[in-house]
Amino acid sequence: MVESDVILNATAVEIQNIGKKYRTSVSRKYQQPKSIVNSEIWVLRNVSVKILKGEIFGIVGPNGAGKSTLLKILSKVTSPSEGSFHIEGRVNALLELGTGFHPELSGYENLFIGAALQGVKKAALLPILDKIIAFADIGDAVFQPIRTYSSGMYLRLAFSLAIHLKPDVLILDEIIAVGDDAFQKKCFSVIRHFQQEGVTILFVSHDLKLVSLLCQRAMLLDEGTCLGVNTPRRVLELYNRRRSRGIAWGNFSIHKIDSKFDLYHNNSKLTGALGLYTSFRCGGIWYDSLRNNWHDLQMNEKIYNIEGWNNIISVRQQWAFRIHSDETVEWTVQFQGIENIKIERIQVNVMLHEMFSEWRTGSDQGSFPLEFDASCGEDWTRLWIGSPDGTATAESGELAISFSVSAVSEGALAVVNSHPDFRGRVLQYILMIPPSITSVEKGWQLTIKGLITTVSRVS
Image (cartoon, rainbow, N blue to C red):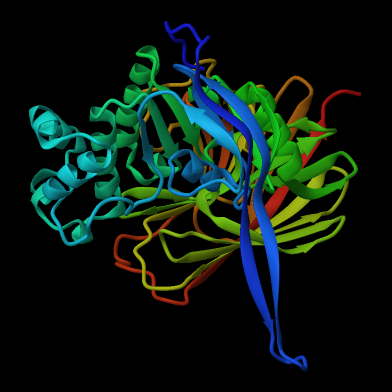
């Protein structure tokens, strides 16, 4: 949570029983006589909250919960069907890429349009124009038409304009996720600075870790209803309980929350920040399965099959989990390419909780470092690497968890210590694609499978 020198006692945003409904019409053309049936769909109902001056307030919930609708109401993009709200001071909102900018005009020209929409005249914009362009850091592209911009370039320009106009209330709807890591860090630095100056920020994000780090309070929306306002930790605990799906048998269970898989033993969580996930390295950039859109294919008491698509690279994945016993689960991950793509590396990772202190393989053993190295490279701190034939095990005082891969002739197992941002111990399978393979052709398939086994060390 970010500390602030601002005393949180004045109300910046007050929402009273806000509701929003849409009217839909369905034609019953196969009935005689033909008729049109009108119905109402409420996307928000009875939402009330007070947000304080200088507060970073998180809004979380699943897709379709009503988050974006609420922000559009507060931004006066749409009107509520019932209830009311009051905001102290000037509001600036970044809701969707495309809002307020004209695609045929240059970024430079659109800065004047965007400022005018916020009530800022040209004479007031000119003294800060160079700072806006410098912060956006899109080079000469600022003089090119907006329609030629990538989503990241668009975000840079829109965010830079929004912050330099110094609003009293800044509304951010998931938009920061579009930027790269370096630009995100600049954005977070600005957000912290704004809070210290008393700017109120409404922050919607599916990145629950960011909500925990940045926000002082949060609200959970689901099916248009506010389910609670509390500290980020309490709200995210409630959110995760509602979103969890999975299977359990004996001492072992696996659960999915949104795009993340976690392992449990006797109801104790074994996995760390990223859980069980895959990652691709393409063009020097890592893409992980935590950004996939997943949907269930099959789920019963012992089998859980799920399919996921990555929106950035055209790769489909299917995970299959089958519980063999109280202590063992068989996992299979199948990859399929939808178009030609250059893949440099594929990894299957089990990130474990930092409580695991020792590791061992068939030939080596050691202790996980007590400290997580912030200066480590993209491979984090690799403690051991060997052939895929065998098992890598992490141990705590009471429990050991083993990870093995079968039916592969290439690749390697590895034991890794993560970056301090994640504070996890990683058991990993790595498949390197030879540099001679310039691209993997459309329709390619790859299947990797293995076992995860937990062993209690307490009699």
